[in-house]
Amino acid sequence: MKQYIVTALVTNKSGVLTRVSGLFARRGYNINSLAVGATEDPKFSRMTIVAEADENTIKQITSQLDKLVDVKKVSLLEQDKAVCRELLIVKVNMPPALRPEIESTCNLYKAKMVDLSPVSAVAELTGQPNKIDAFIGVMAPYGIIELVRTGITALGRGSDNIYALEDYNDMF
Image 1 (spheres, rainbow, N blue to C red):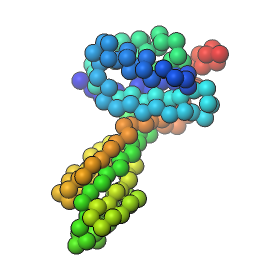
Image 2: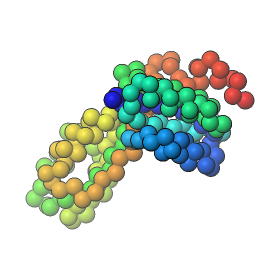
Image 3: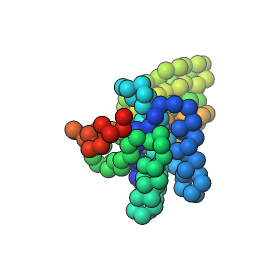
Image 4: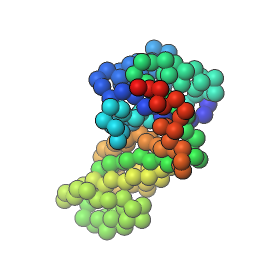
């Protein structure tokens, strides 16, 4: 099984996320991460879906997504030909004695401290998933109280873009 990044340009209206995630659920496909947000055109949202599948299954998934009325474009991004980022917000124990060490670790990873209390700290970090994983591993010994990850968001590198697909203008 390989991890695939599926990106979809969808109509920006209620119910679209439910229909897309429902398609996965009805067919027993698991979504590893899902990020959705409005695009530069308020009529559209962009979905970035990460799923593990074999080649035949991912072809079936993209084909079925493409049949949904509110899905305007579907494409697969290759990780080496895309800019992939994820956001992490993590709260860790931070006794006063360890504060300099934890701050130094955050600086090393270019994580930003966004909240401090006498006993804990909240840091945010944006980067590739492997960087996020490594930072979590380094912070774990301090005692992670809680964390949240956004999941991958991605865009193709260079001139590749979802609008360049040949029948974009046929969407209207």
